[in-house]
Image 1 (cartoon, rainbow, N blue to C red):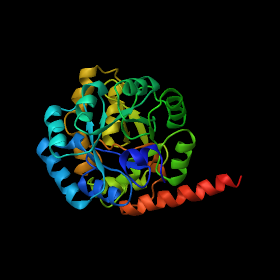
Image 2 (image 1 turned 60 degrees about the vertical axis):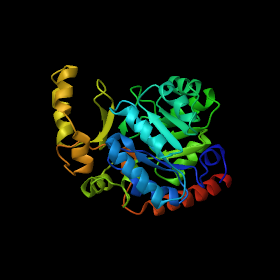
Image 3 (image 1 turned 90 degrees about the horizontal axis):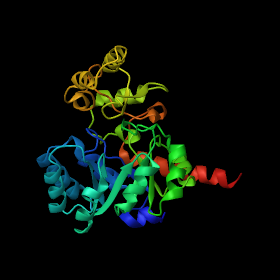
Image 4 (image 1 turned 90 degrees about the vertical axis):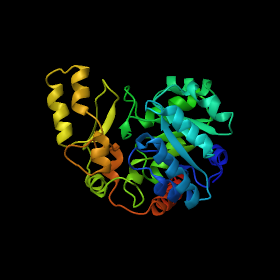
Length: 313
């Protein structure tokens, strides 16, 4: 299935696994890459030495291309980038920062750079910064999100209208039908996060995976916009946020409630009450936990079936 993204990354299928904190280690990334997609190691939850270990293990587990996702708001950024260069990683996805900061530095070393955006404005800025492709992520997505609440169905065609570089759709995509819809709207590929959380290889806690499978429509919400908007499952921590909002809190009070390592406590350690449980709205359509390879195969099978159905209309 050749197109601009499969050719850019030298992959078989235009399916990219999102670089999710506490879920995207070397096991998941290598499993997705081995099956023909693009696996991504999520550096956002890793100390530099841990990231190096995951990159080295991923290289041993697959001879296919894989990437590293780097949220640029995290500390140790320079050290992380130097590790990526030193370990000869060929693809980097940047997010939560100015793409101008690192794009040329990485590209001069033979690394392809993709930047994650949530609006047309930032897609244009990323293109001007010289990135090789952009991920346009809609409001439905899990984790940190755009403040404008633009949905994927709206965002993708608007970004497509304005940019010339390859476009990857993200947010609310977990099936082959969703993939087809995104590509009809103008995407060259899709980035899938929440569905791969519910995989055997995801490094997130089993209790969190089980909760994702049980989630229904309306069980997630975008909150904490004053800090960094995040979509998460409703639990006791969410109830504490709601109670605090009823008192018209200051930014400092929200920071105090959030504290440190909330996401690690929830998604990695399995504290389903006091932890931050980041997942997308599409969780309501995820009903089982299976190997990453099966998820990818299922998406491609459904994509072709849906494509044939549309062709018959």
